[in-house]
Image (tube, rainbow, N blue to C red):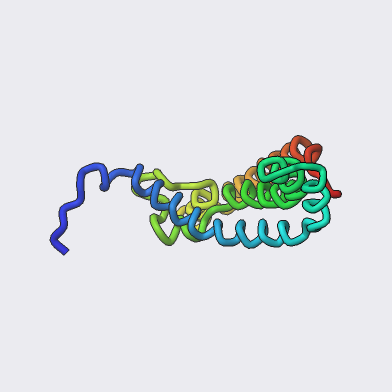
Length: 152
């Protein structure tokens, strides 16, 4: 269109920013929907009882909303960690892992090893390693954050 882009717009850092903006845009709607469902499950009687005891805005949020949304937050944090490691579709469509390797994730690297270089065993081993890393991180996250989840 005849518009000259500035030099900083041609580098790999902008590709990473574009992927970040897209990912945020796509997943914020899902996260908000899940949080709204979690908010809908908090009984109004708890807020009413806290107001009778003298609690107001910030205290209601801190002592009722946040603890009772902890299962929702815990679920979304696990899904986000797993999704981050699996990120493939939107990055491959947008940048194919480029420019250079600026947006190459583990999934894209495994895909290239399998389909571009026909390294079946290597890509299978990498997939198992990726699975193991995700499993370990999920277990650690479950043990660390699981203690702070309130189900009542």
